[in-house]
Amino acid sequence: MGVTSIEWTDHSVNPIRARHKKTGKTGHYCEKIANGCANCYSSRMQPRFGVPPFGSGQFLEDFNIFLDESKLAEVRRRRKPTKYFWCDMTDIFGDWMTPELLNPCFETMDATPQHTHILLTKRPQNIRRMWKDDKVPWRATGRWHRDNVWLLTSISDQKSADAMIPSLLQCRDLSPVLGVSAEPLLDAVDLSCVTRSDGWIIDALRGHWTTEAEIGVDSFEMGQMEQGPSLDWVVVGGESGPKARPCDVSWIRSLVGQCRDADVPCFVKQLGSRCVIKHAG
Image (cartoon, rainbow, N blue to C red; front, side):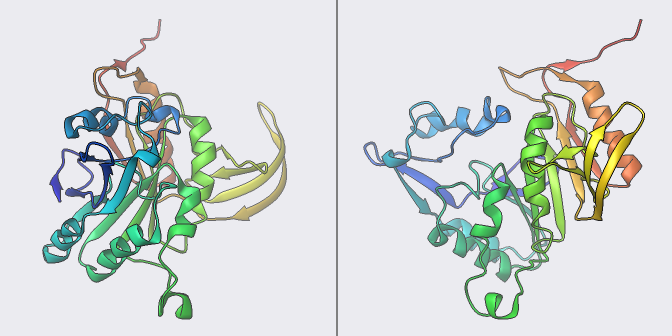
């Protein structure tokens, strides 16, 4: 496990590693798929391990992805209740993950109920497919829920919120805490108006799901309404690092206010390296 400066967790643990087939150097593998990935801190760190940064010379066929079981052993040995952020150097639900890689991780989580295991992904659509539920007693009893595992998805703007949050909310039966990490926050986000691809509009903080035919300035024509799953936690922060993009403080204030009004915990991690404060008048 590693000491981390991330304030909402205690330790990070990275059991999924990547060894370059030609050089034998060992780092991590990931693929950039969203606007928020552009200045990924993990990608910047890969040359320190002797491997290319993500999306710039990294190709899956050049790597052997393997499990470092020593990291799992560290988690199992620790008795003190600890919040673990899993795979902060890659995506634990990346398309390249296999049951051979993931099942031992889930088994470690199951064997350490004293810990809280936090899984953050930009690929929430993969969670259910990759969730370990294929062995007795999981499938036999339907006990897919894990009390000590929190599931988060990463967003940066309204487009990514619309793409990621609906898939995460479909995992309500798997985890007691569903959350969003809005970091790096690159634009304003309205969590009360998340638009699913099929037209459903979700108030992700209150669990109101509606099919709205038309939204006007002062009123809207409402179709079907349902009470659905909602978010339990929001983390927000501006971008840091040498190429940080601007973060308007009003975007952060808006998310804090949305969470306060809905009584959902919100943690402001940082304002970022290029904090923008616009003054009226």
